[in-house]
Length: 581
Ligand code: DMJ
Image (cartoon, rainbow, N blue to C red; front, side, top):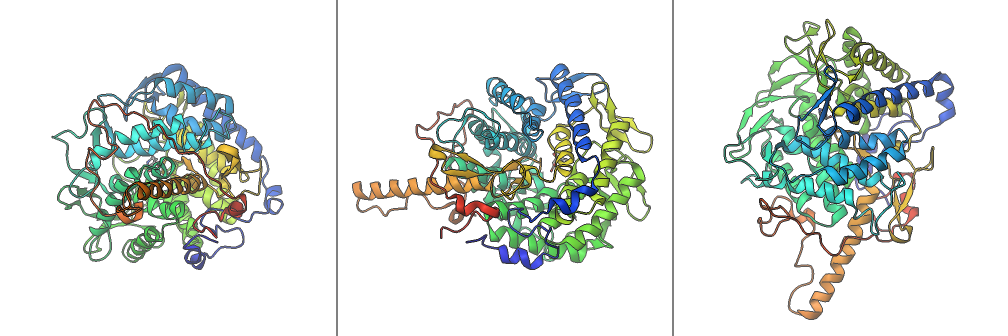
């Protein structure tokens, strides 16, 4: 009983017993070995909480229901849509910080106020990672937050329905000849006829975590199908030397920007291949990542920096480091590539120390910022990597980065109304913007860095007793297999996916059996293929799919997906998934 590719992961693991060695982030962690050395760890957590509430309360007081707070003018603005984005993005952070009552209050405000039936052009990528991801995560944490749960949770529930509703509005973007989505969709009218077909690589390949979660919780395969079709199409466009570029035409499959690297425009595509492999126990996704990684290591890596190269020739096109690339050491540590992760982290940390933050672009040969890219919009990536690496190594260097980040952000970015993006790290000029990822990611990862026994670190053996029961009769054991963070730091629970999809399979078998009794000639199972077998096929036509036509309202199915028996025995130490034995 184990993850299907556990051995492959173990082979690449070079860490000590503190390393991440299983598919589920479960580690063996001896608190007493490490924590006496960490003075003031709870003081740091208290400071991080007060940073959160300074920004959060100010958003509620001055900006809600707009998407974002403007921290210099103390008001709000819509940015990525018009759905109170900061509140959706920050919801699960409330629970991470232990605030159940506010989580409950906000979850119910969002149910009452957020409407996706709006004439707004929204980014397909951002809406997915922030809105769909945020709602899914809040749905999965609702039990732990003490919310009243409807029968059938976690396979049904109001926040899950909201997440599905938001995702349904994105589906028209995927209805292209290639299956690769447009970058922007109108939530009411679908894709505009004048919409550009040019999308960034991450905008094509960053859906599998949220969409497979939706499919497996609700039993509706459409979401996972479209995400997989986009992934398959993207995979087929890689160059002869195994690299992908930065922007692609989703109608013609032509690469429009041919810079290959691990940063802006590409980053979360690679992240989702690895995390999708872990969440879904999907060896094919892991193999894709390994193939890319071989080419990345071969062509783009120099002295543990990662440069940008021409995707067909492998020649260096931009010798720069981008702050978005700082997620990479964390991803490497998930795969057990600790030596390499540690060295790359040190490079990036040296840039942080030079400027007190990570500039958007940093010229590696010049050792300095790049013109017009000197800002630090309070991004989380280096802190995210520090969290994973501290978990994997116990090395206090990563806590030191956390402290540096805390001090810099307080000193440079704090305003009477929140925290402002840094426009220029050289003179500390500020921008009137606080992106929603500051509360969703930056604060969350900082807090988790200083709380190594938090339930979100997984394992089921530590801290507050890390799993909960769900569903009728408490037969669904949740949270014990660790959590996978989406690219906006919204945790997803693999055990819930397993629990709900297994039940929906049993229901399908029952339906097939009943059908074969009433229509003996029809072959049982012919009604619906498993999602895996459908990968690569064109999506269902609009009339068959759950995508709404403009103006159409979705009626909910009478049957929600209740839970099925799930043995606690299978979920200890995170080894929950792929085997029924
Ligand atoms: C977030 O929205 C996500 O982490 C995304 O993958 C990249 N950009 C920001 C944070 O920097």
